[in-house]
Image (tube, rainbow over all chains, first blue to last red; front, top):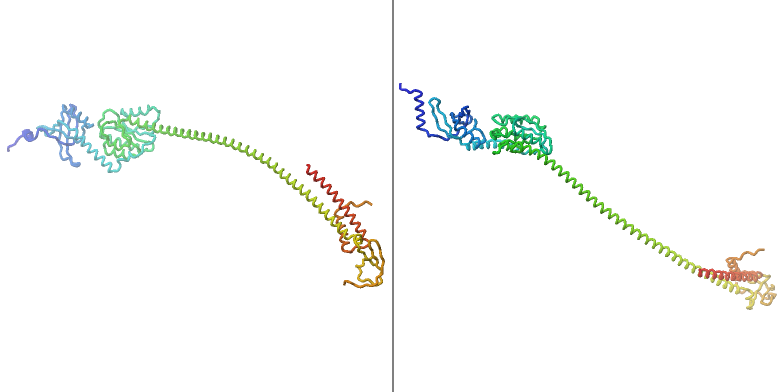
Amino acid sequence: MDHVSLYELNILIRNALLATLEQSYWVVAEIAEMRVHHNGHCFMELVEKEGQQIKAKTRATIWASSYVAISYRFSNVTGQHLKPGMKILFNASIQYHELYGLSLLIRDIDAQYTIGERARKRQEIIDRLIADGVFDMNREIPMPLVPQRIAVISSESAAGYGDFMNQLNQNEYGYQLDVTLFPALMQGEKAEISIVDSLLRINSKISAFDLVVVIRGGGATLDLECFDGYELGSHIAQFPIPVITGIGHERDETIADMVANKKLKTPTAVAVFLIETISDFEGRLDEHFSSISDILNDAINETSQLLDLYSNRLFRKGQYLLHTGQLQLERFINLTNAGWKNSLKTHEVMLEKTKRTLCHESLKTLELQAKMMNQLERQLNSVNPENILRRGFSITTINGKNINALSEIPVGAEIMTITELHDLTSKVINSKKRKQ
Amino acid sequence: MAEKPFQYKKALEEIEQIVQKIESGDADIDELSRQVKRAAELIKQCKSRLRETGNDLEKIISDLETN
């Protein structure tokens, strides 16, 4: 039977490929495995997945001569090293070697594609965190007024941690902060799990801390992919006390930065922020004290002025009252003088009146008596028998008794008649009653 | 026998009694002149007292006026 050797077949395949295919293609694939040989060549296994299912797989090589430039440029643009799991757009020619089979020779990598890809993945994670309802949770926790008990997640040997501690310890105000380090890997594939683990350890004694600081020490600004992970983002977002990041990079913010309560560029900036927060608080306290003092001083001044005013008023009022009192007293004295003079006058008048009455009445009484006496005298004169007799009347008696006192005068009775000049004795010749 | 001090009021009463008695015609004839004499005497005394009193009053009043 006609046949070719394997070698001949492989040559045929190679020739067929060379004849059919373009010289190079732009291909999108995911790096499934990657290793850099000590001679500087880079060997990869590229795959294309549908879900978790691998539906295509090819080996690829970047020769050492171009790998240095490609990886350098890639890192510069993306901020990441080429590594497994990364989706890349690359230019490759197809090689078929009779001994090693099919492989791709990568000549160039379009870093922009990876950036876009990374951005897409990041966006997916952000969307997921938002959908979980946790994205804003940590940012909504109020920053403590005086953050003093700090849990630091960092690598003990990292320069950033040293910077952070120096900045804190040498603060100009002499504030003492209680810092506890929770060491974690800050780069590499295991960094995300390590940081999450530190968060969980802090959470187990959460009441001992005011806030968490995640810092990553200076040096290379690469390999920030761990801070874009869903797990870390989710844990930071839901952490019960504020998380501050100081991851130390200038590029787009990571998801950890986005969900953290506060994002600062460097560990030093975090330390400065903490000191400033405390200092602000102290400043506010000072301000309050000062305004309290001002208010008190104002109040004291005001009160003092008021007191002066009152005391002046009181003094003037006192003087006024004294003056008025004196005037009143004088008036009273005058009135009293006038009063008793008046009263004296009244009494004098009364006395005078009484005197007149006395004189008048006494004289009147006297006069009355005199009149009466004259009247009596006249009466006496009118009844005086002497006078009667003088006028020619006489008095007749029988036996010494008034003749008018007798009811009957018998004939022959002797009667005595007295006249002015004579006493006559006679006998009754006739007696006849004139009146009954 | 000491004479009783003169009392105007009593004298006046006595005079009035006497005058009344004489006017009523009740007086005893024997008593009559004596009674009249008594009254006349009393009137004289009363008048004298009134004069004295008048003099005293005048003096007193003139003293009052001058003070």
